[in-house]
Image (tube, one colour):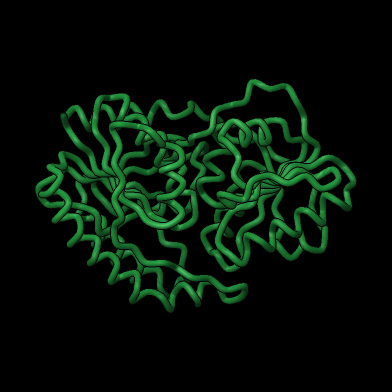
Length: 348
């Protein structure tokens, strides 16, 4: 039996979410899967793959990133030494794990140290251009190219460059000679329910911004006076109903899809995995970038320009200055392109 190691970055829930279809695809193709991650990403994947006999979980090294309400980018930049050390620790861990577990292939979602010189290794990332200031841009590209060069291929979860690309400038550079765009990748499938929900808010991202957005959405919904649903993204929190607002802290994929597909007005972050989900479900939304996260700000600009989406800041949401929803979501063929690419790679 062949065995693949799939490493998932624990940086919010997005990497775990978009990796799940590939994990399930490998299982369907008859492979055993070792999943390496940490923290909330590991907890979430264990809950989604509970009882799956072909899957085993392993804690790998990984830096825990902390955030602040203000100066988010400076806070992250100050932790660069910790990130570099974690990459070296990942390399050492991977060498030992490959030998111990007889790994045949490696798929790494943004874990730059999880590769092996003697094992086919793929890096999955949408960041071919790092979202940093122009002053650091050239240096950042040199670093990312050196890190990517240790992998055999780079997979980008996006449509090919052009009018249907959802990552825009973030995938406009080339960091590896063997780069493949594997299409939209999402665990969510269109809901068959015909129910409608006037107001829906998706909360995601790191603290303290996650809680700030949740509270602001609740205040906005109360002011609107219509029925609302908040997908709060906090595993283990259960469900609460206060007046006309239902908050789901740990919903199923079906509940999330039903809320998104049935929404009349949808507000969410512009995190990349959230945008993948919007494309998969072909839904429009008002986009709110996490304060200080340059990547999400750039994605907001891309989606406003290419797809006509309305955008606003977290402060504007707190002040209940939310624009009218607008735009047309990009088209998607589901996960088929990605699964086909996975099958061809594993067959070789």
